[in-house]
Image (cartoon, rainbow, N blue to C red):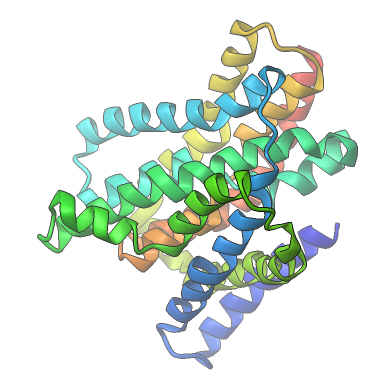
Length: 302
């Protein structure tokens, strides 16, 4: 319940301060910088080293990969019909392909399945984060380079290897194999605790409900895939691999979470359809509560 209240308060505070014009119009960029360059690397360093790979975790490991692959196919088909701009194409892809599996997903799983089942979701969340820090970041930077006409392999590689979340992810995957970095966990816990409140506050600052008229087609496409089609894909995956019980249910449940908050901030930071990004996250959180409840009863019936 505390997390749900925090979501409401942080987004509402951003919306209210934006309406009152107390903060500069670009204040969200400074907040985004903290989230992307400080809190997010801390999250990677804290949790990525703790992933324990096992064949029992095959379905949770595959969930983010299936969701991303399905999103790529969905956006390709949608783009052929709608002829999206490069910025809109990338914004739709990353918000469809990456879900909010932690800040929204964990409390929802605790509420529906109990806190003892969250450990399954942690695996999904960490693979999602690795995808964000690699494929997601590269996709956004590549589109940004295309827009600025600086596209080249050297340019993209240079930008990626200067991006702190990517560097932290690579570090967290390699260095703990040789050196114990857990001594830094208390500090990392404090830093990463700032991520969700500040990210949600930034979403609130950028949330322009009046823009729904201009962005409703793209937003509805993003919500359709993320809240409905993505969990359907994972349900098929679980059936194909004969996965049952809470592990399968939680995998489907997590696939239906709203869009990844941080990837939407990064897309906004690079001016890739920021109005859509804030809308799909804000509306996705609200509608996600409804669709997640529906998925819970559907999964219990199957």
